[in-house]
Image (tube, rainbow, N blue to C red; front, side, top):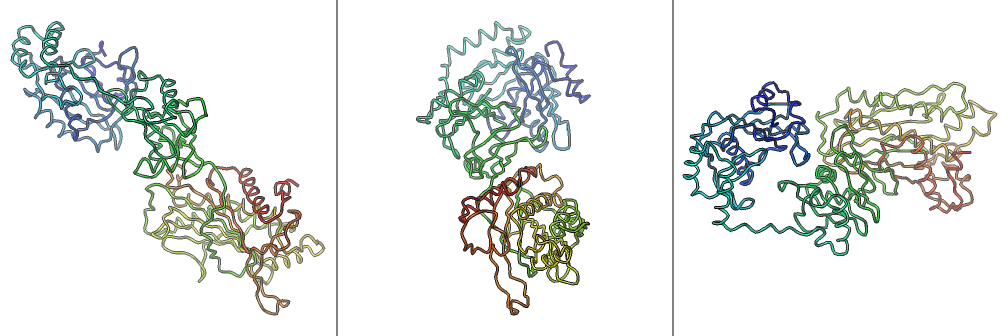
Length: 626
């Protein structure tokens, strides 16, 4: 901005044309900051009055808080608007601090905050040119942590600030300033030499070495640090290496001591250079106030064994490993937004929520339970309104699950009509203030239901910390299904079977999966943008119920086992005494896979279950492709 006078910059401020500043260099009349002054901190307050007094001691100028810069050929160039939160700016406090600590008073100084949106804006401190007879403007001496030789007279020189030191120089400066018409470079140089002779130079700060405290992993820190450009590009370590989560970290300080990037190393792996903003996203992703706990949840950046990983500040995906939450990554979900933790889809045997609530007497139960929790998310209304319950019903209708179960029941009928989803009613409904219950049903001719589908959508409560729980249950009366098939197609022996095939089970679970992952939309339409408080998952259960009473049973109901409801013969040779009544599988990260991936995951899980039961030649994938 050497060619742009302060008056022009003031015009841009008044016109709110902040984009005009982008590309402009800092100068003797313009200085910008990316963050607010920390007035509660002694060093932050000292920084403010130093910057203001330096402009007053030169030609005046503007201090703009809310812009970022880059270094180009040794000069600071304004390269982006970075509005600061309005809640962090108290203009009256800024004015009072300058008025109380700068002597003499600066004439016509203004401090204003200009909103950019509802929550952020730009802080503008305008220091007009001051009469030469009022100079120099003196501020209290530094606290000794940063500038132990600074004694109170800051001067703006080009785009930097010089200090004139020693309180006893004030009278000399006052006389010389007015006599010479301002502090020329030779005067400043002479004063600095005089002060240097009187005040011993401060000791150079001692910083930890790169990798200090890392033991055998030290070389990985050094290699990553060098690959990232060393001190010139990354800054210097602020503390020795510390153990955090699954690995080791060493934070760096950037320009002016501000937080810089962080070096990370996983055991026996190469190091990574993590930009400061991405490190903050990583710490926040783990849903814990304590950094160690948060990083322990999500892990650290995944790196090759020998090659350092240099993460760009504008990256949109960072692969992670070593966290308690399992395999995952940081991903930018919304343009320009923070990176959020997202799980890689995986399967395991851990299961919860096995509490069937359909209430009907059925021989086969299939259940899917979705459990998803978001950070700091609370459903606003005290109870679910009718609109949410209706949206719950509509989402199931749109999912196509009703069409699938109709095809399952009427597989040999020429025309298939999907049953309608309706809000459940009656004594066996599960509506409450925080839950919605929707039901669809297929009934045979003049008989009990052949298949009943139930879905419950519930917000969290004190007993269930999850943000959202959703269930989809299918209850199938296999004998009624067989009777219906015999009536529809009496000549078909295939239609008369009273057990479901493995392929039927896979397709049913996939259809339930596709339906259940849409249900949170009824409570939070844009739920995909929210940060997780724990890994989301869906659990599937297959349970044998009680045999429907029939004349052949003597009126006594009996507990069925899995071979009674599933045709296990296609799995090959296996045990003859599979006495299990239920089984299940769990998928972490249920929102992202497409239908083919979901079908493959369910098949893999069922194949593993069959192998664990003793069907050593089980091939569920072969059954699906045949």
